[in-house]
Amino acid sequence: MNRTVFLKLNYIFVLIFIYLPIFLMVGLSFNESKYFNQWTGFTLQWYEQLFQNQNILNALYNSMIVAVVSTFLSILFGFGIALYLFRVKNRFTSFVEKFIYVPIVIPDVTMAAMMLVFFIFLSNYLEIKLGIATTIISHTAFNISFVTVLIGSKLTRKLRVLEEVASDLYANHFQVIKQVTLPFVMPALLASIILSFVLSFDEVVISMFVTGPGSTTLPVYVFSMIKKGVTPAVNSVSSLMLIFSLILVTGVLLLSRKDNLK
Amino acid sequence: MTRNKLNNILGLPGIIFLSIFFFTPSLFIFRYIFGSRTRTGKTSFDKIYFDSFSQLLDFNVVPIINKSVVTAFFVTLICFVVGYPFAYYIKKLSTTMKYFSLFLISIPFLTNFLSRTYSWKILVSKNGLITKYVSMFYDVSSLLFTDFAVVLGMVYVYLPFMILPIFTSLENIEDSLLESAKDLYANPFKAFYYVTFKLSLPGVIAGVVLTFIPSLGAYIIPQILGGSKSMYLGNFTVLQFIQASNWPLGSLVSLIILLFMVFAINLLFKFEGQRNL
Image 1 (tube, rainbow over the protein chains, first blue to last red):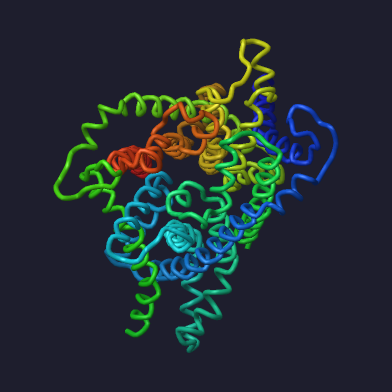
Image 2: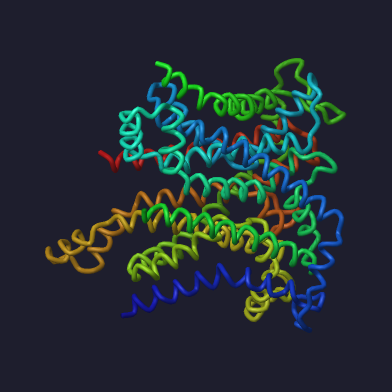
């Protein structure tokens, strides 16, 4: 009896612990008062100010470009690697299968450092400047692995059988990909598009290292605001970023759920 | 034959991209470690230097490593103590509630890290909810910029990393095993320890590794909740790159973080391997 009560209390405590700060922050972003310890009334003024702030809008624009382009590239490269690993089995592919996890598990500080030294070293010999392009390349470098692993987990024996059936029925290589493989992995493909967009859009440390002046992404800009203190502006921009990624992540989870039920 | 060629071509662009923009950069870190910081802040490579290694002692990096490891240890311990009962509880819930709870735990797993750390900052800053509560017992005006805030912030952000793998391994335990333990007159405690806990160990180890590693190299959380004075491995590294322009030392410390990670992951594989035997 006591044990059940303890487990239940722990359960409720954890959920409150996780969600209370989030709700508090979103709530405060609608607070009229500048101070977070008093509630004086509901307002949207902090959000209005946000959309008049040119720095934030520029950063948002940069973030969007980086996220869209790096998502596109990671899907292109990552999906290709996943199919390659699924169809070809040799020593090299078993090495790639293991190595592909490194960009996922590497600490972001380490990856940030190595991308920075790499680009700066190259800039001695080539015309390279830290900016949007270097940020896109770095984001693609860690997103490819997420795409490969996520799609790879759906490339199962069932798909292999289906592909064999299709080619027995005289489908050529492209017909197999178009009519069997693609529909089969579609939910995982959509999920990895959203996931790599979110991962790129939320990334701070690596972006901070490889962006140049004028190409700051939104999280990097917000990070510099947060370091200064708790303000209504930070409340509202953080709430927006959080809600945005919340919606997208819910999409990923629903997609993978649907996929598992299939 | 042509099919095989096509399959190879599918993977080629991605593999080339990763070799140039991930594998090669990782080699550059090694070159920078043996460089030397010049007076202008640039790194000189004209010979092999060992400056970064001697600076490990000169700049008191060892206490920073200690502090980071101790912090990561406590974060992992708290996550385990809170996370294991949580995973155990939701395993026993009805299917709908189970998936709903999993859903609630998975969301913060992936949503904006920065915003969540910031939301925690509101609670521990002056007049924040948690500060008010703690100040009833202790004489504090603000918990912000304390190690306490850093530990709690890390627990807050990394707790799902502990819960999810533990839940997965608990979910794979067959109920019949527990029943047979009972049939063999094991008391509930023994049944739990010898069946449930032992079989969930792989999930526990995965959870431990997944919380320990990011806590050890964390940069954002110490920076926001610990302030610029408290030094952890993550923000010490960033400091070397961004402000001190001491790239050789920064490279060496970032490699140390990586080595900790490799060590932890090896440990993980070792346990997995033992289980498969």
